[in-house]
Length: 461
Image 1: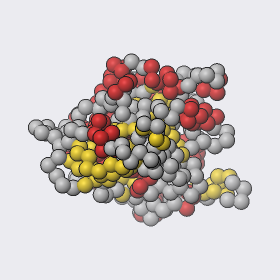
Image 2: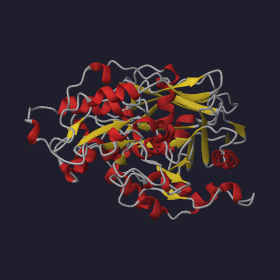
Image 3: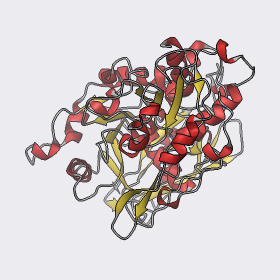
């Protein structure tokens, strides 16, 4: 690991949209099922690797003993800004800093040729934002770890690794055997804005949750002819008096149709500790599918996904994140992951590029991603043996389908055995898709995304 002046890393700021430095922060005070939830910027890969390398760097080696050199250069911070008058991306200047960096890389070409082949760097933004570095011949043979690799011809030295997601776990999060696991005990539950005062919300919720270590539910829209706007209340875990709040409301603004929630007494999403087989068919309690996102006028695939979801409110929940005043505060991040954990499938149509952070948020919440382009997950070969094992691929453009077709009907028809198989596959790899807060266990079955990437770089060196 090079010891570079701070002007190349920690003294830089992320000036894109005038954002502050993306330091991930733990979201406190949540129920056990949200263990590991962080406010993590999707473009914070540079800082995550820098922090982990600092933690992992426990010994000094002579340069000639090193197989690989890490270059802690935050190459995509202060790289782009918005021309607000014309609405275009503009380069704010990087060539001179790139050139100055080379004077510090004393071991480039010293032990191995071509120059840079034994060096690596991280790229924390989507590929089309990284053009200056990717087109600079000084970095040509340097290994690059980025959140995507979209170029048709491709850079043979650029490899995609997972987006930083909301969930990040410490090394102590390995599953532990519990003889008598705590179970959900609903202590209060109320229907919101209804005339159903004679119907017990506790009884309704108890059908889905009582006596289970984890459960998900979808608030009904009608009971005995009464319209239901949502549910809210509290629960505790058996053996404890600590209370946790929950809500599943369909009338919040700007969030729409967020009438789903998860309740849990075990740490983290269900894949982390046990059975992640969410009920399907007639036994289903939570939504069949969710879509967390928004759509611009030109994003026809997303527009159609939203339309399909809204046409099947009994199956699908849509959380609209497109409102201009919507801020990603802790409450919204929690609601997003509440929906992902409560649902069987998570709809992930392409946005600006084929892939998106939501794919990894979905997988880490135990939700099977539904993708509409095989390239969405195929660009991460170090992490997926076969993307079909952990996802559902819809091989057609929804805009070209007849008006009667709805992707939710197809998802509802999938054999529960197929669903369970995919959930099991997600459970086997999910830990490796997140960036642990600290060095992960040396147990080879508990490698996180950082460990996987470093292992492959060293193996291929």
